[in-house]
Figure 1 (cartoon, helix red, strand yellow):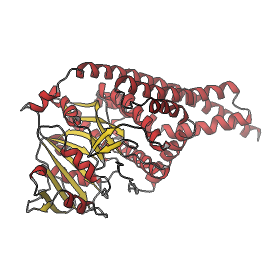
Figure 2 (cartoon, helix red, strand yellow):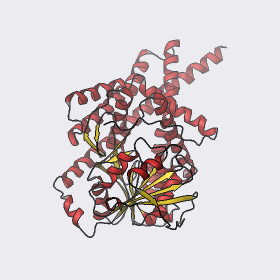
Figure 3 (cartoon, one colour):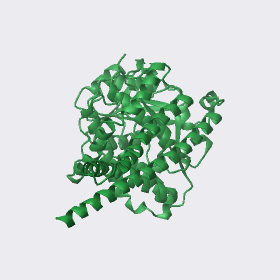
Figure 4 (cartoon, rainbow, N blue to C red):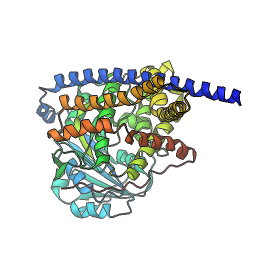
Length: 473
């Protein structure tokens, strides 16, 4: 028994020291990425402060874009979203809305609102997809750039592949049907393609629309939601996009372009086979596959990120729906990393193999498990007297205080760069929530991500029911 107690003491104390070292390493890495992101944002602001996007709008060299919007049970938000897309400031763009076998009246709502009729257009499945039941166009000339495709349900990836097959232009913009883009969003996200011929994909920032005032497919007034769950997500999005993806884009190590808003070269997407339909993380998996294709074929390329062209999306407002979303995201991350596991620490893949993939494996993927075990080891060890107060205090500082610091820093970075929330009380609320989220909300998200491992092992492939409230007027 004494040997067992001695072994338990060694294990708990050793893991407590390990978890502290892990948190210190993670925080140093986060600080490095934050510094890179801050520099990249300053560079972006300097370059674009005096940029006249009217020149891009009027130029004959600006490439046309096909906007792909998959829709499944989106009757509450699809009209606002389509109106938003049709009103974008862009010289030549078509909107391809793909109804993925919706069980609600999404198709009827669209057909009625935009006076659509079924055509005899032949569907050519360059990428294999589920059956397409019909292609619709509007009888009204003001909607001549709108195409609606009705198909059997096959999931978001299959719907996007249908959109790719139907699209006519060299650049394809993948968005969610519940997304609202700002007027000049497409111009700004297309600019890197004009600046650098090597660019094959560009991601744009996504922001939370909950609480905002929506009028005629546009965000007319930016406000923070009165509910806690969407407000917490605003801070998470700040960390993910401004403090994360901006830095990864600067070193050409960006593995994720949000499915809510991304622009891609169609020929590269076709060469890699389009979206993979048997994974719930199809957006990340496609980007990683594009990276691999270019690196393995020694094609000069860049995957970029721009922080200014805003896509507004409706965030989950309940813990139940949010938990399903985060569970799905983590399952998608796990699946993608397993599919491309040969990239880990493989110098052939340069920044991706030596930095990006290891980060996503050991920090993003396994981090929740390590963190949860750390709570148990340090808390239980302190209770038994194995872990002294100094170790316990150090654990609290590196796990909580640093989390607060980076959340607050992300809010401040947003405020000094883009200042999207004009009301002082919204800014103050975000700063308070940046502290509060570390006491409860963060631990709940850790549990959701741990549960994702169990669901993945059970073969769960579903997205889960994502009930939407719809954009409020």
